[in-house]
Image (cartoon, rainbow, N blue to C red; front, side, top):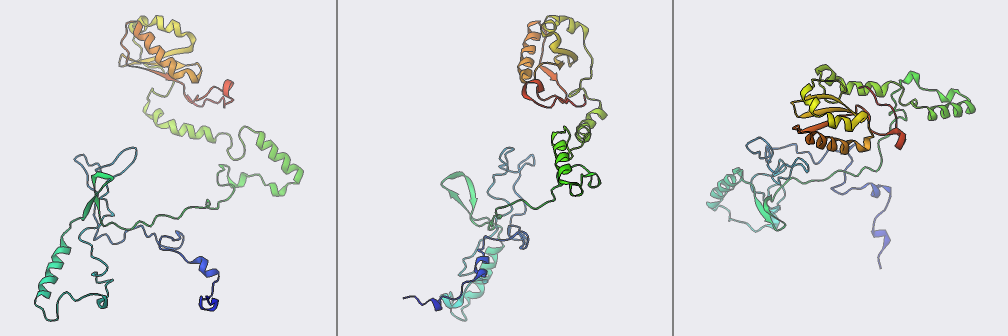
Length: 304
């Protein structure tokens, strides 16, 4: 029978014990960061254009030989000076053997070669896989979001926040109902969203670009006369703003947003049927992104 007294004492500290792959980002240093890079590849191989070999714009880097690949020949733990135990090894040479000095020189030379030991994986026959790489410990799974103040997502200044603690329960509930029914609640005061949209468009305003705005540009009257049949079909649904490079037509589109792309393609066909060369049709809608009368969206279209 097993004697319980010989198994030691089990307490709460046993639950705090961790495996090698378990670490606390708030306390422990990141074990995935390589601090001594002398034995590792300095830079991932790049092609003639300076792009990392194996890099894909959608899936990212895919080259197995990267900066976590170890250079040189890695020794077994039985031979490595840091981990070997002479008592467990059979002596390679007898004491006083002249081959000892020659062997040490050969070992130093082999370690000085910046070679990468590789192998071929049956599942990746087209890639060269490094045999020795830095251990990847991963990152602990986040079980919760970091604690923040409940006002962290509000744009209202601290001094302008409603002090519900100073109100009576009835007045606090009444004020909360008012804020809930308001179009611009306290967390996003009126003017904040408009200012943000304006800042996003400021660079286009400074450079005076036409794309993305309702500003009118140059229109060749001869070309406009040729496409009159197409303009009559469109009617008040679209207004011609400019003709760029003689083949790109910009319109102010007033129709439903759900039909925008289809109408643009159809307009391109109408213009082509008039015997005019066309390489593109642009329907400008400003900040209008939905049809509020049909999907209950915000009817605010923003600056144009």
